[in-house]
Length: 158
Image (cartoon, rainbow, N blue to C red; front, side, top):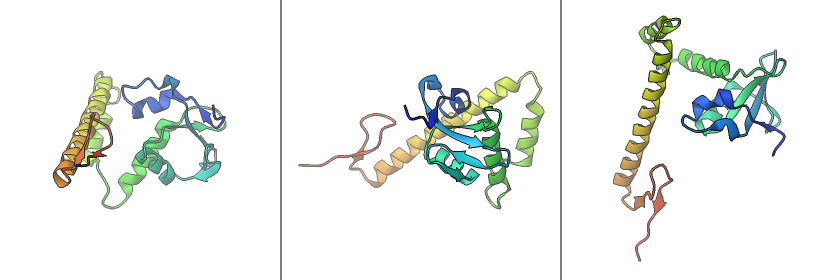
């Protein structure tokens, strides 16, 4: 096993719903007190934008506080969302939605709401993937998939 990869499964479980991530070794990002982020796999300092790229590319990672060894992945993910929300024209979360989310903290339905939101987003992503696959098939009928969730495979005619 690569010494730069550690198994910090709790923080990343949210990114891989339905998968037992306890056995997955993942990339470790160390966060230092000066807010610098160090990617132990590439041995370089990175930015939140680099972490966002890791997420978009489906990389599995964990962010660990370099001083306390505490998992701070959740905090860093929220930081990325906060930065994206403040950029002009990229906001997905309205003030009303954020206020409603805040109201659920401490409420007896807090856990239910979190689960509902997670399931809703997962279903949305699933439908989005299905629509992309259908659109690809319409635009290029020679593209087929043998199994759901696999990469399109080109068919050839003899």
